[in-house]
Length: 58
Image (cartoon, rainbow, N blue to C red; front, side, top):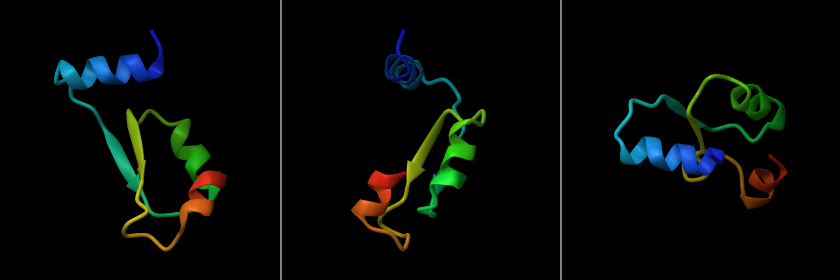
């Protein structure tokens, strides 16, 4: 099963999932979090000081 399919099935089955909101555009930090045991990451573009270009670079 793909990561997206697995994520969707876990959401639909109401499994406990742990994630975080990231407010940094620094790709190194995002890579560190991506390799962690978090179930999801959310790049917070509404409350953080970066734009679409910075998100695309991540």
